[in-house]
Image 1 (tube, rainbow, N blue to C red):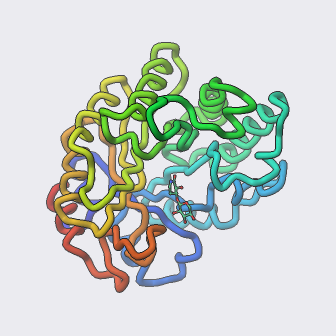
Image 2: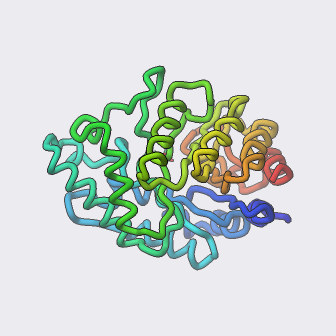
Amino acid sequence: ASTLGAQAAQSGRYFGTAVAAYKLNDRTYTTLLDREFNRVTPENEMKWDATEPSRGSFTFGPSDQIVNHALAHGQKVRGHTLVWHSQLPGWVGAITDATTLRGVMNNHIAGEMTHFKGKIHSWDVVNEAFADGGSGQHRSSVFQNVLGDGFIETAFRTARTADPSAKLCYNDYSIEDWNSAKTQGVYRMVRDFKARGVPIDCVGFQAHFGTSGPPASFGTTLANFAALGVDVQITELDIAQAPPTAYANTVRACMNVARCAGITVWGIRDTDSWRTGENPLLFDGGGNKKSAYYAALTTL
Ligand code: XIL
């Protein structure tokens, strides 16, 4: 096939991109979006600071724009993200009482998921809850510090009730290398959730890579998580300077694992990337296909 989405579909996978609502009136942008991609993740519009900036009052203008555009163009949507320590409004971070915070977290999950019910294929229920470095434990956050280790389980149980037909994912970065304490910490959590019947369907590997691309063990990591009985996805792919070999190695790691459901790049053109000056994406600022594009397409 001649596009990323259509080529990925030949093996039952998808190829997606992060989308910013304010770019949907840029014709170069939407032309590439609707030609190449069949999955969409809102880059910022579904985060807590965007959807519930003050307690109990939800705003869905920009996120609705993205969802409506996607559904009108046959693209499925990954909801990103319900519980995250970052891009979190100050009023949430200021809560010190566990009963209050648990109610606020569950109300946020239920409020956002109910608004989009039936329109979201998969949700990043919890994002980036594990610490960097060697601890293999949860990172410090208002959720961890006030609610304790159980906050992730609570979030997933609340999410399952709010929209039982949505796939529920845990999403994180730097969990691609099998030989890292952070990866092992997330692996133990997923294994424990599956053993105890806590609802979890998928694990997203952000894959924000340096120039050398994925660690050699990335394929092993994807296979080992999949063997726990969850789907795996590459959810925010970008690679500094976009070396074609690094992109090919990343795509191949997914292709080699039956339960690797698809790949999402974190933006369309280099000028759309959050990694300013790193040119980490598949299209240049003018919307032209880069070498990395062809490497990805031919490896799918
Ligand atoms: C980034 C966005 O791309 C930026 O526009 C924003 O300023 C900060 O967040 N991990 C995630 C994404 O899960 O939500 C982040 O997106 C990148 C790191």
